[in-house]
Length: 506
Image 1 (spheres, helix red, strand yellow):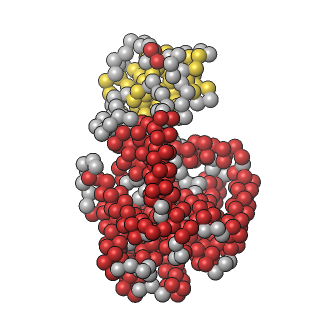
Image 2: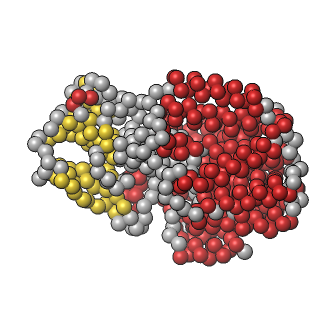
Image 3: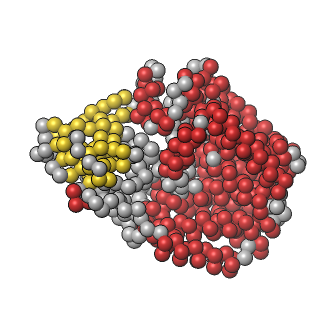
């Protein structure tokens, strides 16, 4: 009933994320799917030219397989396609819960409260046309198949989930440390088959681009902007604390990139180490499986409300564990608060990371409950060693360029200098736009600086050596002005300046 209510509301809601999938598949159908799909200017221009104005889209960091999976939906118009996909997703959610209930006989009170606890994730998934209801089905059905020793089915479903969103690859750890080597072999075998199919369809060069450019940035939390509090991830929280940015993060607790990397690695080791201990010792396979899904959320550099649909198996598993009612009720309340924390927005750091705080509180409660199976002393030593190594070894990649001290729109992709003004071109829901700002200058030279292999060159002299896409470098009064997506999502450019004193240094 809740899902049908939200489905009805979605008719008045914008197309949102579903448009990314739909038009990515449309490009694949038309034979234009390629690296340009992942650059938001080119992607939005393609959609605009199809006759769909007032959309602002970005296909990154979705996998090429996702475009393949949504190909059948391009046979019908966009609105109908979203309705059909949402209807299928709702049916799959009901099937997942019904089949889990049939096997595990969950407490009826927990089942009745489930749509309340997960109301916002369910609502946003349907309104946005997201894929997490489908992912939940694939993961839970795969787990049921694992439970029933149907490893081929398990492997097929989990590989499909990995092909769509990558992060379920963490379940390799679940099988490895559960010593389910036969199931692990099936999963690896099906994974190799998916890889072969992907190479045949998209080619080796395209996958190289996706892994080195798109996935690399996504793993650094670079989907659009450099600092996005809505992700509510430990990665972004620590970045806010320790990584200074001259424009977007000037108030840091302590300016230290090494401390950021060390704390992040220590956190990931602590989470994965706890999961390994629990997987080896705990008998409740549903609880262990659901904790690996929780772990994937905790170590991810980005997150969203609909991601928490993946905590449904944990919610149901908690209803069955041997614990006091107070423990179960507290965990359920924390899950409710995590999923619905959007109602309590405070735009002041660190209070705007309430959801992360609640998620860590839930994790701490569960780990404390399972303390008898975790060797915290050994784990603490390992975490400390890796913290020290990361702190002393890691160093921030040097970048002698700085962002132009002006707030340009997130999708700026071109500029021009004339009449002591800087005219910059950007894209928003209305399409291509141009604005200007005062920028006095004496000389402009657009011929001396070139881009080779994504690096700036002055003649034969290389000026930059960093992992970012660059556009339109010009020498302005002895400084090099150019567009770069350094620290940003792929194709989300900022105007940067490279002083002449930085030449021969970067």
